[in-house]
Length: 205
Image 1 (spheres, rainbow, N blue to C red):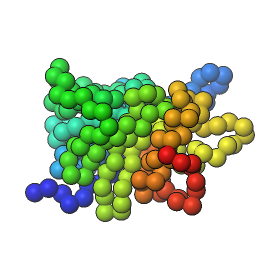
Image 2: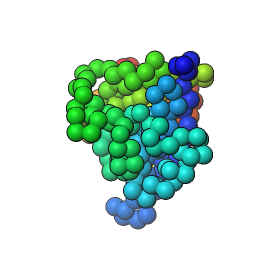
Image 3: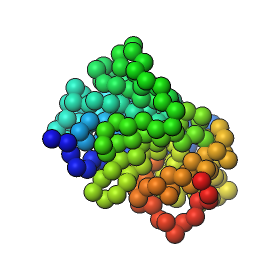
Image 4: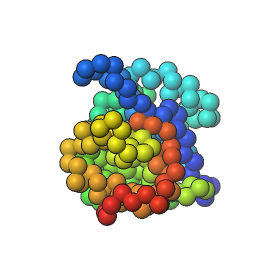
């Protein structure tokens, strides 16, 4: 029987820490969605293999239970461990692929199930996507690096958190504003889930 709402579980909040000049330790946020179709969103780095398997087991899920793997963008710290899910459908950019079969190429929106949809949110790169999930606490947007972490719009020590990594800043600003209006909570690319403060104005979408 289909679940009325989905559950979003952040298995590992992402991080990004400078280690010195032009050197950084980073890993993208790894998220599990439990719905009629179970999904993984972003898969960290290769060193996260055992962690992912342990976390899935803790939540009563096996790799075979994962129907869909969604990759928000192609940065290497978000796309490790794809071979843990050989039977899953993979979604990235415009592509929907299972095995070597490209099942579909979508333009604007892709529906995974009644609780999960995917839209294009370019800017960080031109193929970035965001996952929108209906939960009991409202809409959760899993954004990859569209948002780096909570309050990444606040400039600290003259370092702008998301802008240096953006391929198209103006386009990313529009995508960020769009998601800000749609979402009640956001799972960012390098941090834990946070609630959207509608009193903050991120601009017009």
